Image 1 (cartoon, rainbow, N blue to C red):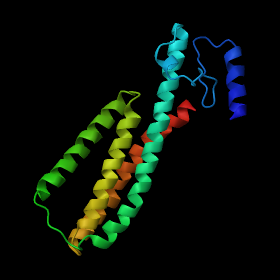
Image 2 (image 1 turned 180 degrees about the horizontal axis):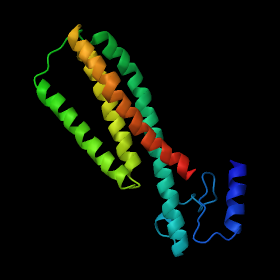
Image 3 (image 1 turned 45 degrees about the vertical axis):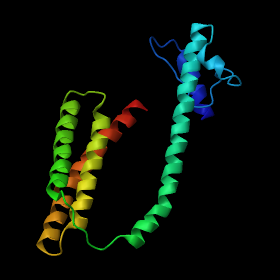
Length: 180
């Protein structure tokens, strides 16, 4: 990390026009001992730095909240695994599947259009689309009856949904490599 910070300083001092370097971690920010200073600093640059620091802290708190919620779900998994019946009936089964496939179709179209336009938001759409496709493959195969239904679900998963999900993951991840 220190080497990255030194390289960023070196890059910034070489006179790159319009380039900005942002510290990744551990930058010296405003004094946080009095939180009211974050809300009402006198200098506009201090106000901007204070807002950025507050935003950074909120992201950190949100991250910890997500970790705690994920850990809290672990005991719930045991409750589900031991308490759910082997079979169940759903009142709105067609609505569930039509709704999921509608979301998939819309996501594929949006991701494709954004990728064709080279819109910087396409990695987000691609990530969402990949997630929906994997969820569909999972539920198709785990809810299919043994026999031809399971064979059809597995074929769809292996020949369409999972390869499309992999393509979407590639679309999302390749941008990270270009910006690094």
